[in-house]
Length: 138
Image 1 (tube, rainbow, N blue to C red):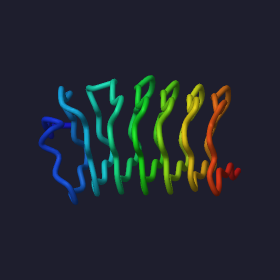
Image 2 (cartoon, rainbow, N blue to C red):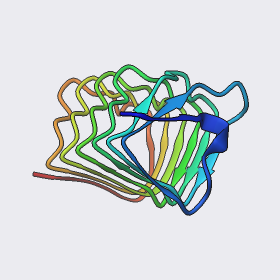
Image 3 (cartoon, one colour):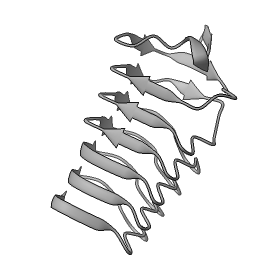
Image 4 (cartoon, rainbow, N blue to C red):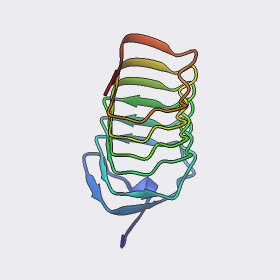
């Protein structure tokens, strides 16, 4: 993984393969970006915004995305073990083949969210506000 980039240098519409991203001190707003096999040095993504993004084979284990907004995005083959999405808002988001063990979506707002072939053992979906659809497909 020789590609090293400041988080703030992410460009909308780009695809990043095997990049390592340095942490950002600014509020995170990312749109129309695909991340493949990337590493994020940052673990706190609270109050961030992710629109039209794809995450493929990303390790977000034990990261915080509390009070974040995630719209029209896909997570595939990601490690989301212990991730915190408390009080976040999701719309048209899919998770496929992810390890979501101990995932927390406490008091999250979920609209058209699907978990397909995911391991969601011991995850917290309490106090969620579900609009339209929340699906678990085995």
